Length: 90
Image (tube, rainbow, N blue to C red; front, side, top):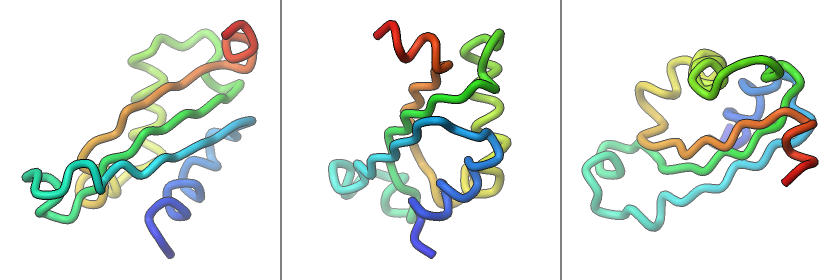
């Protein structure tokens, strides 16, 4: 399974109503994390589970869902986590 599909599968536990993962690893070729095999990603996720949660709590939920991937396969993750209500107001 490729990395983005694996990330999508793991993030399904958050029941996202919108999910986009952009692989920016090619922009970081030669970077220390890239040399070790970790990718650079932008994650845009909208979930009702984020309602009432701080930004830090949302990020912790995402890190928990991704689990071991955060230790080995993901070097950098730019997270944009929103609720359906806040996503509509953008």
